[in-house]
Length: 507
Image (cartoon, rainbow, N blue to C red):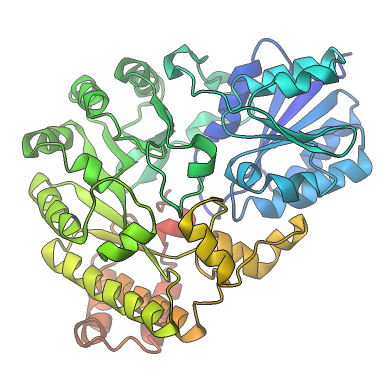
């Protein structure tokens, strides 16, 4: 009986329907055929701990690999990892994901996380298993993208590996996942299609925004699969599972125009819609004809980080590139003509020298958002409160330290209610953002979501949409956002879904 098997665990990320767990699929691909492993998707299990415990009780499992994004995933990742160390102390716990990479010190100091994979683990994870299995701890320091404590308790952070050629990576073990969870359960009806496939085609982002959690991991590097490699997988799911839509969960799907246009050419006759994330100043370099071609090939919506219309604040964020407030206005008009829905995220509540300046910036962006909606009413607006990320060395990071902000020093503090909201960018606990400012932002957001309900929640249509618009119309037009309880009641009755918290509504 083998006693070195691995559990690859995807903690629950949100309520409702769920997407293919591409993160643990990628790790599975790295050891497929070399080491035995099982998948556990917390989104698909009523009681994932029971399954984890049963596997560990069998005596066959030595490794517990867990992907950890900030927010809801911590509510299972932290207590489960702690319990594993208490009940099965010989189990080696390995964390990956943005949270682990950015908060590696608090993870390793917890006493129940043994190793952190710092970024992609395509080579790191199998090399780590090999070093442990061959009892060669001296080789750990030679494994790139690894963070751990040595026998002396010293924190070791190894060299960062250059991003790999994505076409050379092994195919994801979709059919192996299917033996644990039927893939059809992941292929959901969303606003972009009746059978929506979720895919990840690139790593990193070529920019270094100071508010982005990706920056410390990839250091402004990006590598993507070729259009043909992407299309091979999409075509496979089209033929076997009859998909008609794809959500690209890349950090920046549209980085390479050549790749996007080649993919659009390949997919144009397949009746498949697609959605992805990009940058305004990158996609603004696409011609009107190219945007229209993408739309005809299936590009229905693009998520874009507008962040703010204030050029001074964009500079403070180290947004990079050429984006300006005026470019955002011009861009949403171009998208309107191309019939592609721009989904713009805004980050409100940046630090400033005075309390008045912080509040004035918030009010400025609220008015800017209303300008955007006037130019292109179909523009989707997503509002976040600024939540600091540990991008050490940046001017913005120094500003937040000087303002008195600090991250929890105890891993379990991250699952307190206040810090969970912090991770969702809804209650950042930042000292410069006062309660009345948060109320202003949230009340405006409620009114905005009443007057312009998100298109991604396709239940909100017909009389529901009309009633919401009628109820919130006076507030939206006059700027009276205080105590919008009547809109909140309708949102609660109809279980209005905000995509920034729970993703697209899906059935």
